Image 1: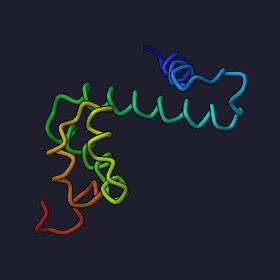
Image 2: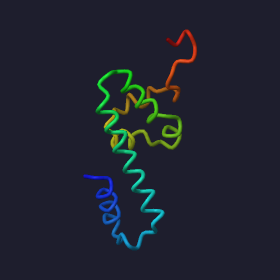
Image 3: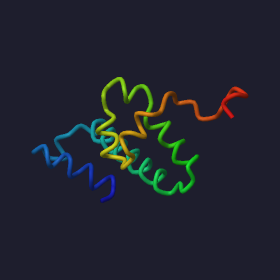
Length: 100
């Protein structure tokens, strides 16, 4: 299902009409659905471990942990919850010599 169709289905599921939803709210919901699809695609297209870990590090950040969204993030993106919980920081590139 495309992000736009998913957005319309989510709006219809609430019992509201798409015309009754403010444009800004509909755009934000659409934006979220696009991001989820991009994350899924990035996770599935990266065959290497480094690529998958990079996606997991970005998705499983401190903000998602703070608001307890790891289970939802796992369900939406298809990345296992254990992999998301194991990320310690959003640092993508090693900065210190010992991290290599």
